[in-house]
Image (cartoon, rainbow over all chains, first blue to last red; front, side, top):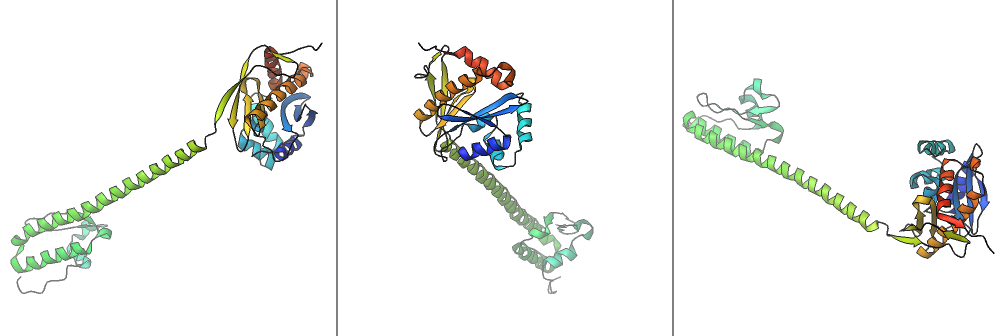
Amino acid sequence: MLTQDDAEAIADKLGCTSDEGRSHKYYELFVDDKLITRFGVRRASREKGHGHLPRELHITQKQCRDLSKCPLSKDGYLQILREKDLL
Amino acid sequence: MKGSQPAPATLEWLRREVHESQAGGYLPFRGTPSAQFYQTFDLEAWDPNVVVVVDGVYNRMREEGAAAVVRQVTSVEEQLRAVFGYTKRLDELCERVAGLESKVEQVLKRLGELGALRRSFLVPIETLEPEPYEITRPFTAVVIEGEGEFEASIFDLGIFASGETEGEAIANLKETLADTVDRLNGLPDARLGKGPLRQKNLLNKCIRKVEEG
């Protein structure tokens, strides 16, 4: 299960900025000063599931775990977005 | 022939007696000079019982002459065919059983996957109240039960959220929707990448902010 810790690890790896919402905190990835993607984290227990993260990041569950745990780098992630014509 | 000491019909004896040029890894079995026949048998699969039968044929040939043995040899051939035919059928049966085992495993695996399939249902989104937004084009959210959580999605608009219950997931989805509309409309188009710009245009076709007061 993807958690808030995973979301924060991904945000840290991608160098995201943050934006406060109503009860969510959103991490935003800007490339060349353009917003590329945005994903939300619930301000609640760190153990709560964040299963929506892969969809917000336009990647698979496995790629999301790889992004959080190391194997997938920021460059690798950006390449995935390029291949999907999102960058 | 009668009274002479027959050689034991061992595998070594058979090796000596057969046509060496044709032996190779297999054993061609020879009957009599006038009624020869050859049959190849796998030496590795040679059955001791068959050797006993051949031993009997050898002894009879020595005692009663070759002519009497032809029928016996034919009988031996039939027995050999039966022995090796049985082995072949057994091998085929084992292969079929292995194939069936593999298929049963696949079916059980598939059944397990079906049992673990995530439950999903559709929720029409008709209002974002109490948020000051009006939905101008209704849309439907998909809620999927995940690993101890529910994931709510509006795929066309690229809005996703999670919650511990279906209700919480939908509430989070609506909130994310409102937050996203606010955020994207707060940024100029020049600062939006392809995905967010497309998302902003779609959202503005479906949702309109209601001016308070």
